Image (cartoon, rainbow, N blue to C red):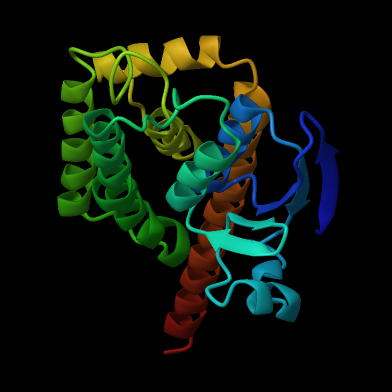
Length: 247
């Protein structure tokens, strides 16, 4: 599906190529809303139609990953780079991404924690389950739990992940943590994470539009994958029974 819609909030114009089920895309979408940027949204279906492999997109982004933005011919992908770029160029102030070196370093630390530890551990654990039908690696499950433990500790003394106000690190990590809802992995036992997520769901007026809808889309895809895996397993079992009955 190649669907486009316009969101007009300011005089600038950016093309935002995304898939709603992707946490990094949802983080950028929330940032766009927070900044009030005028964007031309172009949704592509990577799951069913592999639209990210179409020639026009591969030419634009050889890695054919989302999110990707086109800002008047300036092409950028990698969500955390996009988050910083959008604030640097379009932010009315530096609240979301401070210019003061130490404050910015704290935001960067949590962005790197997300991509290198939290998001990575989530992908490492769930991808084999969703794409290959594995039962789940206990060691990788423990790595994900450890990542959540670290985040819970960070939030024990702070209202937000990188200080006393909302930053792009919150948007990135919020998209990652709430993605667990799509695979029915509860984070409610992590008291500080649950408090923080609940707070942001209430504070961010665009949360449902930008994040919850994509989670629901991902849930539907997970359900489909599980149904397909069950059907394949049943078919293989039936074949085995038929084969054994002939011997």
